[in-house]
Image 1: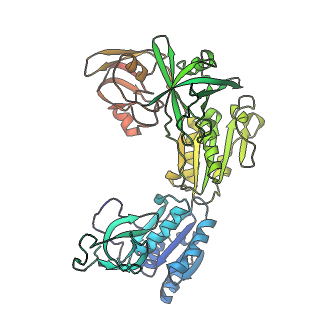
Image 2: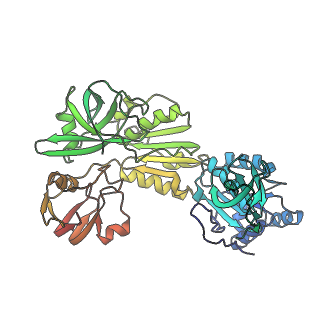
Image 3: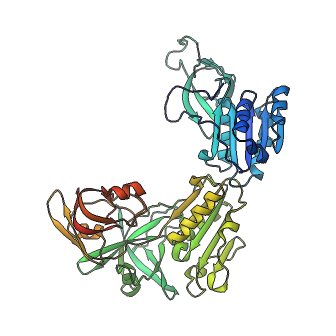
Length: 200
Length: 315
């Protein structure tokens, strides 16, 4: 399955150009289970890219972990979820030098979260490569209570923190790495549009 | 553009070629504060002509009690810096623009590396104060030919992260050593001769730095050149540009309405459409792309000149 193509939207909606090897540059790669496939594709286009890469797999199956291991990356780490991965990402970023290439692959939630950490560490967005694989579930922030709901697949959805019914917007916060959810029935309490699946 | 009528309150010789000027409100009022890297445009009336040059502010951005600039005398220039050096006295009135900034710090950076060549130290003097105030990590490298010429020495504090490279003493600036191994999230800023700006861009690119982490400002004033004529399309009027005048100054003297800001070919404000060009535009700006230059369909009157039979501007 290649890089997902999303329908055109507003300018703030992130787009993902796909991973391209930066050759001998030091690399940090972060991927989830589906995104690991993109790392395999990257390695098959340029096997040497793994010689310089620290790979962090988030919530990946043991089998996936084994596949990446056979590519012989310079370093390989695992974490069960984004929260557990965050301290390790911080450490990799804080030890990295200018010229390091950042490769992200997988869900929008993972890429948004890690790119927000990286831009927070001063890395320009253009230095981050991203490729979308797998679920199109979104990481949504409730603009009212600021709580973040993971893996949102329907529109509207219920905020897991304050319980408001939120409309799924394409409006994305690069600073936080999340899409913005806005109360759907603020003007007409109780009048909630029919729930539909989010599409790419 | 908002103008401020100020008084020259201090003039200090920093080096044989560089003087520091301080301007204050004549009534002691507070001036607008600015951000590190900002400049003002100084009006220099001499007879019928008014020259306007932009100079980086070197004083504390948070201090509204006065503005300070450092001016290097360019004897081969149009005469603006010579005017500042020979005609301006303490107590004189002087008109300047409000500060504008085309060389601001990217405050998202984790660290700032500032590289100055010669008089290119000026924008960094205000940036240093801002970085100090905001407690942001930085290192500054200042390259000059000789200690005598290095006007910035008198204005720089002594600190472990401020490095002086005097080429006459064999201490040249080693760009590879400076840029290699900087922490992720570092931004580099260069101000100085074109050669230095290009060398930094090349070195950063070789080391894989993202382009948006590489910033620069060339501090050139408009160069003099051979006189030439331009035609103003709306009125059909022919305007002569003298050897020591910029095209923008000649248009202003002829009362042709034209917008401007930096007067140094960096901001793009005075970009003017060319409706006829039989000859060659001598592009001296930092705004137009190579393709735009080659097309000869647009010109930056603040910096660029013309050689040929006819140049008509859409003004």
